[in-house]
Amino acid sequence: MARNNRAVYVTRVIVGAIVKKLRAALADLLPIIVVIAFFQLAVLRQPLPQFGEVLFGGLLVVIGLSLFVQGLEMGLFPLGEAMAQALARKGSLLWLLVFSFSLGFSTTVAEPALIAVSREAAEIASSGNLIEPGGKSLRTYAWGLRLSVALSVGLAIVIGVLRILKGWPIHYLIISGYVMVMLMTMIAPEEIVGIAYDAGGVTTSTITVPLVAALGVGLASSIRGRNPLLDGFGLIAFASLLPMIFVMAYGIIVFH
Image (tube, rainbow, N blue to C red):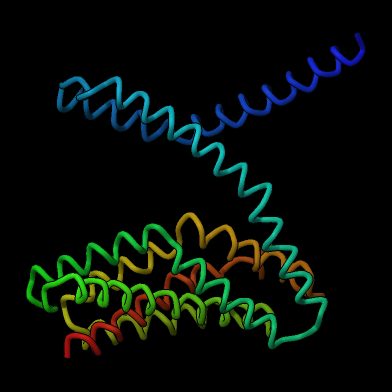
């Protein structure tokens, strides 16, 4: 009897936790739902096409978002913080920088948004006769774009880690970086500028942000004199900035 009561209690706790996560995900998506419903019903004045499929897809999004957030909380955030703290305690600057670069590079290469944008950019470049048509040219251009962005993010994380270690003011680095972006915009081919600016956004997506943010917070927490709130954040800003510079440089090499 006691075992049955314990099983019922555990089941209720699990179900309660799942319901709580689903409600939180639904609350996060509610503004999007309200906007779409308002424009569809009040402005367009048309019912949603394929309402059943849309409703089922929305349900899958809510479930997926809740599972994704739970995975971040259970896995990626603790892992990033633990590895950063362990490397800081080890006292090896070289390994810390190697880990930072590898983390930024690998997460960016695997970023689904970057893969999609690279493929689309390659198709547009081919249709505009900027590169030779054909599967090999498309793959080469898309891979070169992904590689440029991944290298830039790896370098950006290294700069961000050095900033935390050395205590450099973040605004000086960010302002200098955007000055460089504006200067390169004037000399880069017009065909690559828009892609470069978008590349700064697609790098800060589902995979990169959680691990990079956890790295910064974990590193700042383990260094004496560093405040996790003041020094632990800011890595994402570098991960958005440097890809614009590198992609414009890639465009200068490819199109000139």
